[in-house]
Length: 387
Image (tube, rainbow, N blue to C red):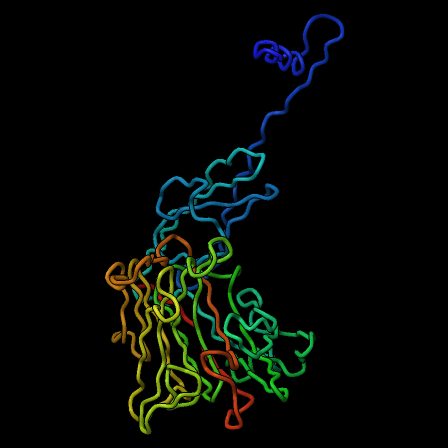
């Protein structure tokens, strides 16, 4: 058995060469340092900017902070460009296997924007004279017919897709010449349907502020429109650890029950929307959801403004009037009595937006001969304001 001393001598000679004549020298290259991240901006509105962080090191992950602290490998992972509308400093490092961490890149922002200021919007303007693609620098697509965990029936189609059963001549998502974003669920006969699910994932995100969208919602048995948000970190921590915020969500026809499955409320019952949040320990039947009842004579099938006010430890929802939220969820009070519940909305990540129409599935139940097709969701605008 070789002794530890002999082994040490052997390794030393193997690496540096020993004795005269026949020894060879092996040089171990120094470990390289990851390159310094670059922090760039594009203008949003009224002094706000959208921040993007990049790095040229192969396989690098970027970690960043916005509270002035030094970033480390456990800091928030950069996933997408994010809106900055407050005074803060972005510090970022790059890490990669086989490299030491980069130096810290830093950029301070002092926009000094007043509360209630519009800082980002998509107004869905279209002067082309024809149906147009939603802004590809903001909106991407979920596609396919996976059932989405709810046994849904639709195939989601991207703009311009000709993958069967999608038809680019009959798009499911487009900006019309009327200046509205159109999301269209179409029946192809039998149990075949196409629809659209657009999202800002990887393209645009934000943390905190007041967001609202002016929406006309389709109603009909088996129709499930929604406007919602997921945490940027869903690809690394998965759902529900990423958090989910449901700003506008309803199913079926006016007079239907939030319980779903085609159940109806008593005649004369008000139409409704539900605002929910989901995270570890509060999903599904244990989620935090509140039904808003529209005033008498109003339905969701009309123009309404659906909004969320998000600040640290607080998420509020409103319809039409931001001064009177119909529900406010707070941390930790709203999690009391929910074993294992963890509030995921202040972990440092931003959220991306999703808007879609689902067709059929466990919650709404499937369409029937009363369901109007095409079912069309219209959005006049999406806007974000400072708190």
